Image (cartoon, rainbow, N blue to C red; front, side):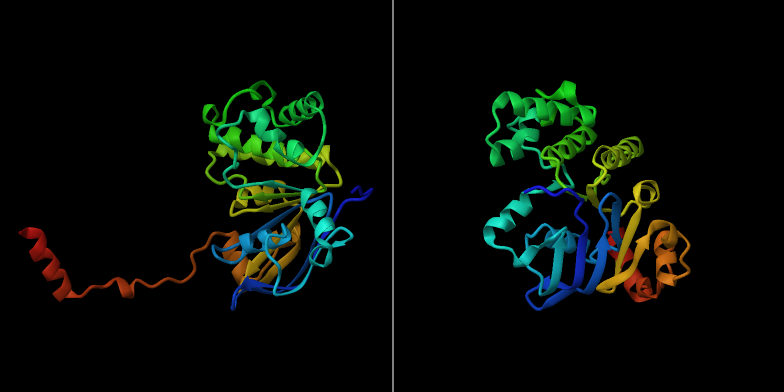
Length: 273
């Protein structure tokens, strides 16, 4: 399955959830090809749920997900599997298999889905590892590498089949500032090496947003609070978006924390025994 143009990801009036619990409703936006889109929002707002549905792991309650020319959930099972194979995924923890070397981990999509000979696979794997600065570690095992290196290896595996879509789940979580900056740089390099690739990043990292994003989607109250060019997002006067971008805690009350003298006295008595 080949396409001469990149695949936009179009979300049309999506309702997503589990059983009777609606997590996101009336989600409509387009994540453009050739650009890096960052999906933001508070904890529990539905970012991971949206990513799972784009991956085809769960069917929407209603609405459409279109990947390039493909209406994902209207495809035959055979074509659906082919489209799924054209998506690269960088998991939050790298998701490397400890019993396999780095090269073998990166090669997994090729060994599972192609009949390429071992020599050809090795050449492709070393090329992808070179793109993330790990070619000399091809025969190391994951437990011999740092967390940042494992994430970079996960990125190499995600791009090993030159997918038109790359989905990244919290790529900088758990990384120190230097490794976070390296991951941001690598994602921008992917945009350069694969100019038609649609790169989607789910993140809480505002520093990454300002560094890598061309396009942003902010989820809030089961819907889309903003979707568009990240430069426009930074200019917003919307109260919630400003609070989110400025990392403002908003109004808080400590009234519920007051125990009362009777309870405090009882606690002191027990502590003094």
